[in-house]
Length: 123
Ligand SMILES: [Zn+2]
Image (cartoon, rainbow, N blue to C red; front, side, top):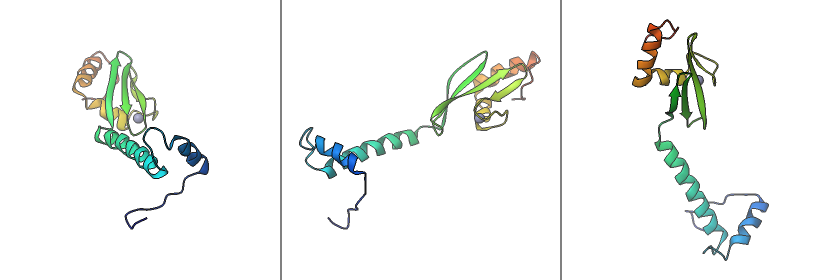
């Protein structure tokens, strides 16, 4: 071991599982297996970090489905005659509602519904 390496403690049952794989699939040591596993996990999180937090999944007459990568789930934002509301936050003024209100195609829908008397914010 050199100064460029550190020791990480992991449960023995995981190591037992790793030991079953050593000698197959080209893995010659626990360290080699662990490096590969950790690199894969790092790649996974790096690629999700480079994506924006929010994305519109779809929208219809009931509202908008927003992908929230920080929460790791899809959030429903209802757009109804009584107003706009995020079901995740139970709020009409949260990051999800604010994101939805910034989307040009949804602003168009909101202006149309507002003109029909829906209690929606001025966008
Ligand atoms: Zn929300």
